[in-house]
Length: 293
Image (cartoon, rainbow, N blue to C red; front, side, top):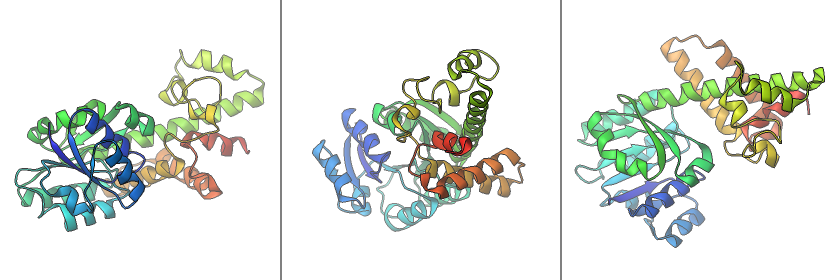
């Protein structure tokens, strides 16, 4: 079992840290929100008092932060230069590829192994320990990280060298956003054509229109029991977070000179949805904007 420092105990980070505790690891955590740290301490973790305190003595440091600028600042101020010799650094934030590679290079220059390991699965997956980790970094670092990541997730994929995890995440979520818009448009059109949505679901879920967005996360209530549409779109993954990932995907497309017309349009639609005041709802709630409600 490892002594783990965990920085960033938000909606995703806290349940991930709690699963590390359940697996028998020691966790010293920090977050700017005191209540989050208190919940970790109440479950057997410890309050590190600061980001630097979370790093002190840790064999593994895990970060789950909002954006690339936060990752860069925390690693510059509290992690690189303070981490113990031989410590393994794992950043599970979803950030831009360029920042992920730059921070990894700084860590390597300091003699530290670092992985970018963003996740898919939302808050439900974080709580259940069933996340998918998309990991960028060396083979040796991935092998070292596996026992830690397995305590928080079900599927671990080594995507390639540094930055590859972030690249996989933005590509995946761009596909998901496009799929959800397509599913939403089709079901709204079915309603207007007088086609029963259950009939469309039964047909398309076994035909060529099948997708995860429909069969696991259908935006029409009553068709998929676990879907947020059954809970007035209480989020598993907010529209604001999806917009963030789409913006990252567009940044990556620009820097790599990739052509992503549907990704760009999805970003515009989700920006409209978020700016309408729906950013805190699940991203599948975009069906309401498409429906006009």
